[in-house]
Image (cartoon, rainbow, N blue to C red; front, side):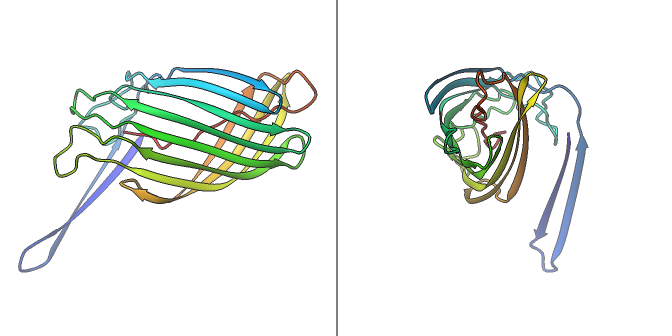
Amino acid sequence: MNATGTATALLPTPISITRSISLQQDTSGFTDLIPFFVDRWNAGVNNYMAYMTGDIPVGLYSSSNLANIGLGHGAIDGGVGYTYFNPKTGHEFSAVLGFTGNFENFVTNYTSGIDSHLDWGASQFLTKQLQVGLVGYFYEQLTGDDGCAPVLCPFKSRVIGVGPQIGYIFPVAGIQGYVNLKGYGEFDNDNRPDGWNVWLTFVLSPAPPSSESSPPPMLTKTPPRS
């Protein structure tokens, strides 16, 4: 991992003086372990999902590093999802709602607050394999961070993202492949940066039991917490 930080300060002197400090660090090592458990079931065009995941902080982390691979603290995340998929009309809509709880970083004595994240996507299948549509997410921190300076705490953040998507389903050696390209334009941000970001996803899953294409997996894009 490579990280670069730049700080500029304007000194309050009779003569205006500007000083800049630039830092850079390259880091390599192992990341955290992220177990993932999911249960899916369906009833006709309605598909349901429940999941649980988390972060086991075994990756490379140091509070003095500019670039860290691990988070430095544990976390647990769980939620539910729903997909409507009608293969006759090609209409598809998915939504996943989850909540993330963070444990204390014992090096910095800092604890990030509980957050909620809603990921959604709506698309039209132009063929049995090609889909186009929209995606979006809503991120809202429900409780403030703990352990920061009183002038900053309780610290909360939020951001909303919306953008286009295109996906394609195809067979791969007896299983089903799915590739998806999507982009988000972020807005209504509070204590988080906003901008454009693009995600390319490739998924392999068991082939559907019939000749009809199955709905693509419900994929989420949640801003990472440090």
